[in-house]
Length: 438
Picture 1 (cartoon, rainbow, N blue to C red):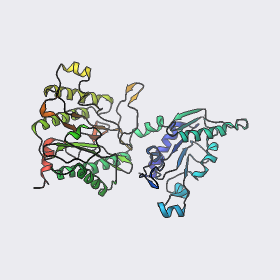
Picture 2: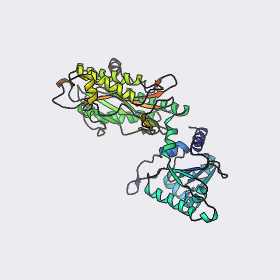
Picture 3: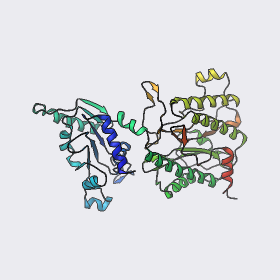
Picture 4: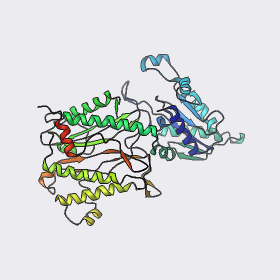
């Protein structure tokens, strides 16, 4: 991502909060795992969206039309002793020269300088309630401004959650963001194809998980967007199954929900395929039903359609199919009204995708489902989860299937970013046959 892109985003935020507003966005903090070992650091998405700054314990301040510059960055100063242990720091000078800050300060000066930056601003935007300690710190700054009211100081009178503005900006992806998301989806798609080629009875779920992570890392995406889900057989009926430790059995399906993160942007792809390379007739019937539902839902992902329409279309197709297969009994209209699908399909058909795998952005605006616009990216992921239940015909029991793609809304329709990994059952069987061990 270029410095020009980050500057464009900060200017968009400055316009949104207005000349009398101020925005304060803290970075993520390092978190101790145990004793002196930390969890791997991942920058807060809102912070990196605006700054690109990779280090913890920083704070960005956006002050439209401020005489000292619109973008102030508080960060850790250079420290040769700590850098010997933990690696190089950007430092205050690097915050200006490398990351485009108009003014940069040691983070130790934050409490001293913030009252000056707040003075004269009417509205303060920051992540209210996300961190009680930071909330208390903000109120301390405001109270210090209020204490000088008789000298003409003016403290912000309105506090606004920054998410209400910033997340609307993040929802619509720029050309640079789309390019990154295409690359992330391509890396993940290639990794899914690799798993289809290597899968065979006798492997463990963990073997496929490790191979996926290795394939992504060697392609330039070291980190995963979320813990991979590799569920063989009945484990596929557990929506967020992450134990990934069971053997893969001949005759079962395996569901793999996995996606890499590339330069802060997520991919999210699910494929379900037979462990032995061939769908059984009951497996194929259910699989083709889920695929029909997904295709119908994707067809509704176009500009002007509302967020709920892909889900409603998927539910209609799945309900019709479950009636045909004898899993549900009754009239379609009544079953839809009763939400009879929910024991077998209990989640929504998708979510926003971007810097977070479940990305930001409201799904409803003024109590109405949001309308799709070009630049929005979502997943489309219908599924069926038929756990052991006497009401389910025997051939369909303990089968879990989900098919998920990453979909960009375009000016004329949509683009499937994850199209490089097959989902047609014949194409899957053909791919799995190309490199199967004897």
